[in-house]
Length: 519
Image 1: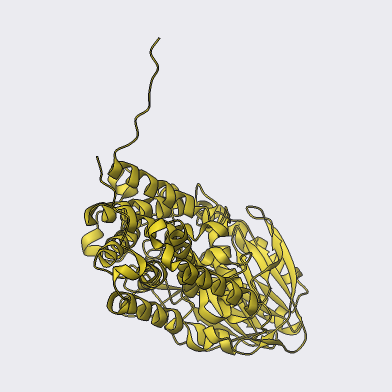
Image 2 (image 1 turned 90 degrees about the horizontal axis):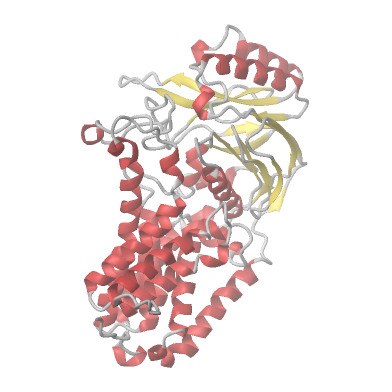
């Protein structure tokens, strides 16, 4: 009887398969899995690829496959929210292109790292400076252009359970991305025999990173001020797919009006566009009756709806308005979700679906970046509407001036709860960066009270109607991140990459990469 013998995969195929698996494994660092200790696999995998790839093309392909594994798994929920039409391409082109675009960064990083290593750059410079520097610059670039989508940054995985999370107030989520990729690269060097000469420096660098994180836990960048404020968060649980149905709209208007009038909290908050109509389409005297009751009872209510932009180009704002004792104050959403709230490059993408989330919001236009401050409960508030909280550096001056932060969101996504888990982690990072407490209320969840270190104090169960009462302790002060923003991590990342390419000595110091003859 013959026995089947499994032959080993050819060298390049094995490299590419392991890179893909490594990317998927790294994705488990993100919510909802929360295995933050897997995030350094990013730097480890790219260092290993740069060392093992026989030619630059193999490094490029392996780095790209790592990215496909990482971002394909992390952002797989994008596919579930798009209703297929008569053509498969129309249903899946957008998320596929986005994932491939994200994956281009690790592909290029692996190629550059291998090339630099072959030219004689030391292994410590490649793994500890070049790879994390380029990774961080790649994540930073996602904040810009009409296609901006800075979702899935690796640094978010460290909020709040990681021992490195205390670095959020100093270097922010982008800086944490640099640190975890660097940590992974250094760990990779300890597994390579030909880098043994650099092991002492590598161990010292790892110890310094961990020690810096632990030491930062003892620093309080902000301090409590005034008395705690009682807050009530109303989670109506109207899924995006039903939200604009006429019957659901009427039910939402009635349910939220009753809950707002019944609240006795000094501040009561609704989710983003909880009232899914244009302002002038709301029932007559709807807002006026709420405003009158809140003013008489010395309370503030935060409601949200759409309103005409008044611009020559048309469209409407996604807006929030404070009504009550603090006076009427309106805030328009400034950073919109591409393809969800507007369609960029319509000339090129006109054949693709305009409403990938199944909602009618693609006529939304952004409000001015600089808008008047918001006051609720007698305290200045940094108010962010959903996607805005991914642009921390651009809005950090508001966080510095505020006593607490409020995020209102609409994270309902057909077929997957992953977005709500990942967006909650973003909010935890924002609270830790600012050193201020944060209240988050979302249509279907997560609605939560988060302390100034990014830890969840209380949360309402998702995917059901809920009322969450919380006491928020305002704080004052400025963290290094709210003072300097992404200038710190981006500047350091650029410097690290340049130093690695230009300045770090011959291969004899760290040993040339391990070359394996492929069959």
